[in-house]
Length: 183
Image 1 (tube, rainbow, N blue to C red):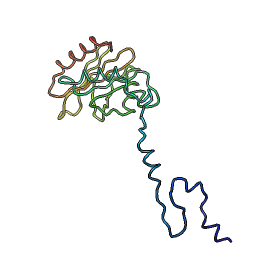
Image 2 (cartoon, one colour; image 1 turned 45 degrees about the vertical axis):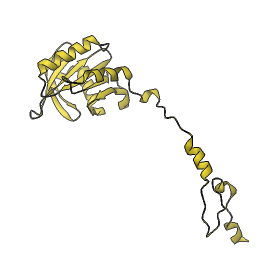
Image 3 (cartoon, rainbow, N blue to C red; image 1 turned 90 degrees about the vertical axis):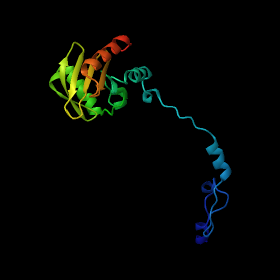
Image 4 (tube, rainbow, N blue to C red; image 1 turned 135 degrees about the vertical axis):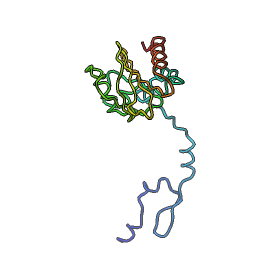
């Protein structure tokens, strides 16, 4: 009597199978059920918090080109997560701690006296304007530089390559900011 109860499988465990489960027998999957489940498309919808900010993404895509090799737009009021701080970027891999450090330096007014790290590359500020900071890559073999523009709600960070002089990239970026709604 005891051994016969061990060989029986509760009906709920057999729901997706065609044959019963006994020792020495194999089970077959219910292919009809599997086909029905796999043929039904499941839409993947990202919640608004995970979608990139479309207008900022548009600006960065327009900006990056000949004079600017990469750019990012950062919120001046960061949240606890990277997606709340980094609104969009192109050509960069900015880390959360780099964003927090940059925002901290700007809020303290010490950006011009600090070594800035963006995507692991170090930059030093050489010129300070009313709302803009211009700097150079500390690795002179690579060259190029950084332009940071502090706006009402966001911070624009742009990098220019060694092949483009600062005298060309800075006016290009400043004109871009004046001509767009970023201002």
